[in-house]
Length: 402
Length: 227
Image (cartoon, rainbow over all chains, first blue to last red; front, side, top):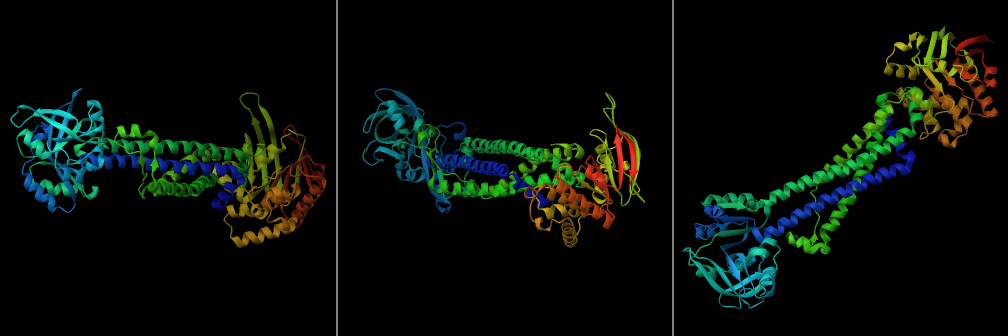
């Protein structure tokens, strides 16, 4: 009886019910879209940082993490390479010599990190070659070719084939300089690399520092799910420190945590707005029916039945609108997930933070039932106050209302 | 046998400021099968008396015994239950549920009492036949005339076979034809089924039909005449 009466009550004011249903649909859709958009932000940030900067796993000498000096080289390089090659989860890897130094042109000088890399391995691991916007990739200039970012090239006022001088500490602790020529100019998706990293061939850099060896292994895996297992295996075969990209760059954890908090806040804000809408509408519905509720109480309808009637009415609205909102949200995410959300208008700002200008909203399937639950809880909470108001009506006074 | 025994009823509004005695020491008994009109000018206290008898209001003093039960001793929930099973209400402005059809409105109290569907349908069909509203059973209140709505309201009040019907100005919003028709139906129900009716009214047509007329002035019984 309650269900049937509640269902009929919903349609006594179609416009009002459609307003509530519309508000719930819009709220659920907005929530799904915002969460998916936030997820795409996080995913894009991680993807770029993994593919163009940190890779999934890095290996360093433990002392290098305390004192990032050239002397603190990765131990047992050959043995690690053997193990990496045998590991099926590994897609590619790059061993890097890393030296802090200065780069000088005829116009100015800047502090940089000099990466000595194997061109092929680095290209496979961080897609460095693909990021070239000008020049060639270590195959035209014979002596000390260097790749620099467009940003650094602009600061140094240099172009392809310009001469630059790099200065750094060699393996004996002596300050040494070398003359290089710009062979390629790249535009990395990593703002950090654009800002302060230049690339030399590892063989050239090792010759200049006077030692063989590397300071860093960057390992790219087939998928992020394999990080923990691979890290564990590699940790077992070396005394070097093996770290995932999240350990290398703690900003990932910060980003993830802030993303969770932001999504929770968004949910709370949207559901609060929805809650006030529901309370307002249901309260209006109760007040409009004061006389009728008075009659119901007079003829013997109990308080708990009146309470249930209002609660069921609101829950039915949630049950009607929730799935529609979810369906709209789902379709939007499917569409945008394949087509992408183009934010080219903000590409410069996004690039500064390491983002592409096209985002692909994504959301876990498990989020949909959770969202439905949140909507139902919100509708339920929203109905409580109007339902209490209804049962507090004095039947005699209510019946006298015009 | 008395179905209603009201003894020394007093209802005072604003007892702490400017007391208004809406009902001032009224004692009346109503027997089963009576067709009683409580009459009096506006503000005389007839509706208040009806509300006290129907358990919708509580007396400041005195007792109301309905079918042997002293109703002011019942809890709110018990009183609601008591009203549902024992008292039928007919209101001046019909107070039907607008989203329900005439038939559903009639069956509503039986539904509250959890009566079987067959029982409900048989009773509602019987009452609609007696009230002459069978053709309106699928119509909603907004699609019915005032007279038809009030007949549905009377049928709803009768549906659960209460001990008596309290009707507060039931003809106030009706035209002459509807009033006469409704009064005839109620009088017939009273004659045929011994249903007890208590009206509050100042409609002469109701007064003419009533077997007993209790006149109230300033909250007191001024006259109590049986025809």
